[in-house]
Amino acid sequence: MSHPLLQPVLDPHALARSLSGRHLIGGELVSSASGRTFDVVNPAKGEIVGQAAFGEAADVEAAVAAAVTAQAEWKQRPARERGRLVAECGRLLTAHVEELARLITLETGKALRTESRVEAGVLSDSFVFYGGLAPELKGETVPFNPKMLTLTQREPIGVVGAIIPWNVPLLLMALKIAPALVAGNAVVVKSAEEAPFTVLRVCQIVNQVLPPGLFNMLSGYGPECGAPLVAHPKVGKVTFTGSVETGRIVYRTAAEKLIPVTLELGGKSPMIVMADADLDKAVDGAVIGMRFTRQGQSCTAASRIFVHDSIHDAFVAKLKAKVDAMVMGDPLDERTDIGAIVSPGQFEKVTDYIRIGRETPGATAHTCSRRPEDPALAKGLFVEPVIFTGLTNDSRLAREEIFGPVTCVIRFSDYEDVIRQANDTEYGLAATIWTRDLKTALDATQRLEAGLVQVNQNLVVQPNISYGGVKTSGLGKEASLEAMLEHFTHKKTIILNMA
Image 1: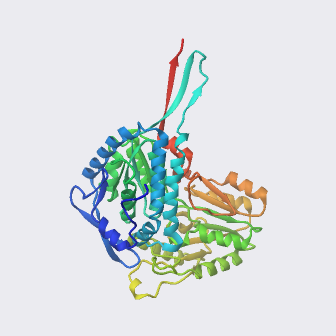
Image 2 (image 1 turned 45 degrees about the vertical axis):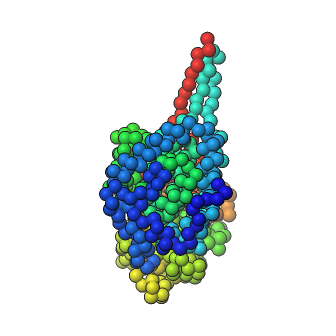
Image 3 (image 1 turned 60 degrees about the vertical axis):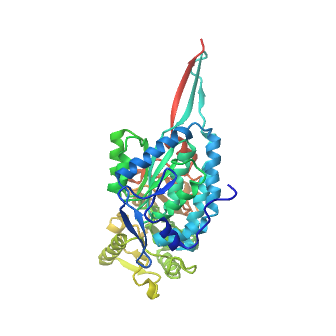
């Protein structure tokens, strides 16, 4: 599309107001069936920036009906044509990266420079990536009987219900929506109540390319909007990212319908720093791995850092100095490294964990950076990052997912013991090992119980890197060809008797 109808709007406040009170159903912005709305608040300033439509069962019914109608025609299109249109969505979104980055910053409190622009860029890349994989939606021939032609083909599931979180809503939405669409499905997305506007804007932008009703978006809360979406009889697949507790509820509901589910849930990711590790590289990896620029609001956050006793003190000193140098401030300010916690409830949870850590005997809290002094940010939900030392792997802060800028640096001296401790958790999303020794690195990658294990780096999730957890961290993979084939299609076996 050479002349998109929608032009980028770089004022996020104006954009939020223009999207207030709307879902997107059947290609159109519409009010909720009840007319109800709820406030969306800028966590950096405590100001209401708009009202989101309050989704309920009637809205789910309308969105699913639109999706069913659109999917009937969409599945008949050649896969390469579907891929071409999805890739065109990605190219169109590229023109809106700055707009989307500013809007997601306003909603979530994430820093524009260090977080939001990156996420908005990966959003568009994900659509282009999956659009190019359309030719891989192919079956196979099976040598069952020379007198029979036996083959398989991939077919879409139908309507996909996608429920996304607030921490990286654009990236995680793209990794669900793009493969589902290319595979021939229609989608209904339920956004997080904290961050509905940017998701709605993305839906509005790509609906310039896609057939009406193929990609629908609802905002609302879990019980009133998410639950009826999962339970709807015409939703044939659910993909969910969020907490373990909510994931279990989604799984139980889907199990009653006997439909497939993809779950990306919590994490308590270990980072192991061996005595021979490059210390500066490992410290930089800890800053990135803890996602301090995202206020630690990440399922893969390196919230348990095991450091060999011989370099523990030097590591902590360097890590503290690095985080101390980071600027906390207005998320829309280009100078800001660290923004605000997303909501009052999350703020209370994080600060409560910090209090528990401070009260734990033997623990030391190394507080880093500093709250902004700007009076305009006085009501902002800012939490200074805390590095705890002196805690053990059985402490609450080392076992429970905090989802905030809080990490535990734990001493170790024995390799076998640190592998045991790293695996001693209900979670299994991600892990890293830092060492110059190839034998140690290879051994750790085989023994660490996680869906994503990295050596001497801590890359964030991105297209073409298969991503997903084990244990209570979830079911299934995202971000890969495998995800599109295994999670958004059925395999049909066809046998033709040639005798």
